[in-house]
Amino acid sequence: MFFFLCDPPECHTPPVHFVCPAGVAPLEVQMPALSPTMEEGNIVKWLKKEGDEVAAGDTLCEIETDKAVVVMESNDDGILAKILVQEGSRGVRLGTLIALMVSEGEDWTRVEIPALEAVTLTTAPPTAAPPDPAPPLTTTPSAPKQLRLSPAARHILDTHGLDAHLAKATGPRGLITKEDALKLLNQSGERLSAPPAAAVAPPAPVSVSPPIAPSTGRPTFPALSVPGKPGMPGTFTEIPASNVRRVIAQRLTQSKSTIPHAYASVDCDLGPVMKLRKQLATEDIKVSVNDFIIKAAAVSLREMPEVNVMWSGDGPQALDYIHISIAVATPRGLITPIIKDAANKGLQEIAATAKALAQKARDGKLLPEEYQGGSFSISNLGMFGISEFSAVINPPQACILAVGGTRAELRLAPQNPDGPVLHTQQLMTVTLSSDGRLVDDELASRFLEKFRTNLEQPQRVSVP
Image (cartoon, rainbow, N blue to C red):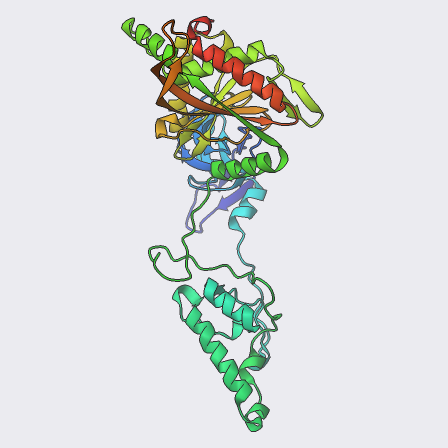
């Protein structure tokens, strides 16, 4: 606490002591772990501003995790005093201080910013004492300038073993273009063919440049992205990857490189499903074909629990729950919300749950518990006109069912007493991708047969 004495010469009143009030101790708000695999997050939007009162449970901001955009809630009552990480910030590590709050009744304008944060925010290049005067020729740069090369220029310089630092860049923002590399190549050829007298001259430009190792292999200089000029040769446009996209890439690579995928397909007759859908529509009950598929898969897993397994670090694990993950395409990437306990739900409940989860996924509002912990995945591309495809297993699950579109085919009906006759069937191809360590080919075949039976007899599985 500091005291200042004010006693001007012309003042005849007693001295006055002014007390400078101390700062208010803050309540720290750190970047939380909003999913088990989250390592960093992006601040999408602050929903409170500095000076706003906050109650426990109020939403402070929206954070993009490796799965979705999730709201962050306050754990304390108080006032938001200082926002340290602004919205739009990317790659904020877990535990990073992002904001400060003060308790109710405190003056939020006098919040104390922690010393560590203050140092971080005010860190700038250190101001060194002016160096002693030295001859200009002896000054050496502290670090070599980072060069930018087009792919064509890289190829030319690598092929002929030329030093990229000797090329004069004429491209936008210091880009060394193909023409610059060819010009350097021509100059090198002229130097080699020059008379010996010219070679005796001191190579002044070479002595001034910093000592750089010759370029061998692929250079570390990144190619230049020129937004707005996609037609320029040797350029590309950088597309920033969101956290969701990065995690999708990691998990797909992990799945295809560590899980032995096996595939099996079967055709299912959707005639009974279509007929039952029409009957339910007359009773104002709206369900989709995908709802029947989810229900049939869940019932099949209940009847064949040896397929309802997953692989852990210690080996196979049998699951005592049936949670179906449904793949939903969103602008941020693919995400798989979960219909929990699907085998015990009716078609109407499955339809309502799937619709609500799909909308939340597209809006980026899924909660972590709504997309974590599935035991079996279903990916349906039939609505996009895809006849059949194979999907990538979602680890640590053992299986994923890829569903294609329906098609009409003429087939023989041998059950007719008058002999075989042609009739039209609505067929749908489904492909099961299974983990060969857990579900072998024989087990996968039996599961598909069970699934087809349940789907083609929707009355027996349409009730819980």
